[in-house]
Amino acid sequence: MAMSEAQRFELHLGLQKLMGEPMATTFMENVPPSGWSDVAQRSDLAMLDRELRGEINILRVDIERLRVDVDRLDRKLNMVIGIGLSFGLALLALQVQIMLSIASL
Image (cartoon, rainbow, N blue to C red; front, side, top):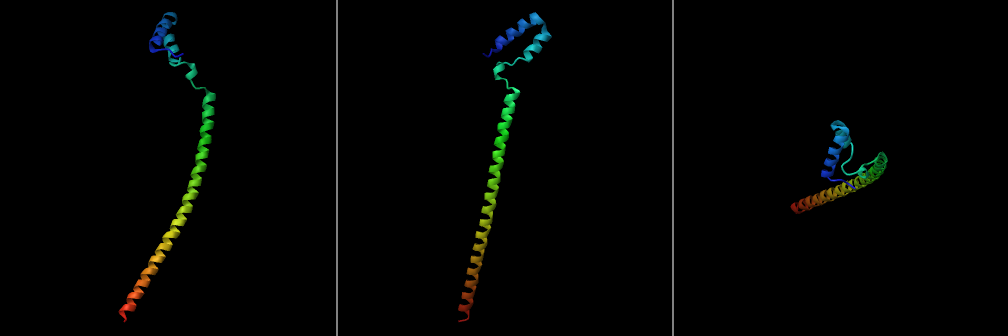
């Protein structure tokens, strides 16, 4: 159970009487305010590290898949733009040919 700030202050005062100011202060600085159950242990951090590394690896795979998809879409877009430009130029050439044919009549 977490203790209130008032309870911590009272504990500090009591420890000062028993151990003196320096030791009581050192003790209070090393006792977590919310209880030891809320303090992370090395094993907790190691487990979190493993989980995060796994998530990062999954993200790397997802990013690589996205990169492949973007490259594929880029190639398709370039092809569509090329076809569109070719079609447009062909229409322009046809229009010029028609205009020249009309002008020669």
